Amino acid sequence: MALLAAAALAFHELAEAVMGQAAITVFDLRVAHWFNAHAAEPATSLMRTVSAMHTVAGMVLLIGALALYLWRARARYWLLALLFSVPGGMLLNVGLKYVFQRQRPVFEQPLVTLMTYSFPSGHTAAATCFYGLLASYLVIARPRWYVRLGTVAFCLCMILLVAFSRVYLGAHYVSDVLAAMAESVAWLAVCITAISTLRRRREGKTI
Image 1 (cartoon, one colour):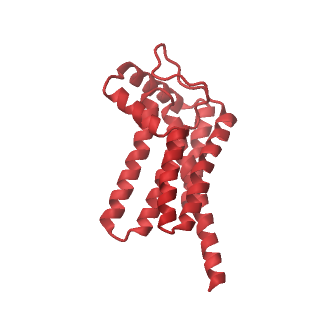
Image 2 (cartoon, one colour):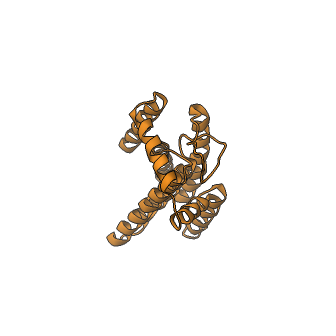
Image 3 (cartoon, helix red, strand yellow):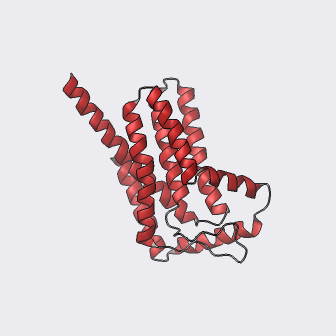
């Protein structure tokens, strides 16, 4: 609940600042134009690859692979959490885009051209949900501390890399990816808490 409250508050503050054209929007523009002016190979190709891995098609493959693993591991409640949190988080993000309707960054020579809205970042939201759930599962399922630490580090790096790729390519502003992280952390907290409560109640009835 504390995590949910903190993430929801962070999202609210970012949304209010963006819609109110606060100082962060000036920072957004400066960062966006700096990356557009300094983009170069091989970084651009790497960022394109990272982004492509986390499109809707890429996320379907990642979700499918993790779902298969959880099914074989008989981690049914975690499988349920995966199927609710990641697709649900992606749908939530689409809804929020239409609520805020923020236009994407505009450049004379864009690296990518997209017609959808910018706030919050869909790629970052999906990655945060997926890698956040993966980290939560492995931290609980794997007793060795170095495995837990390595898992958290890897998942955090992937989330940050996806977020960075969207800013680098000019698809989103910094505030877009920060809001997506906050949104997804809050949603993930709701999903994991709900599934955990369901598991405890069912196990309590069985006993």
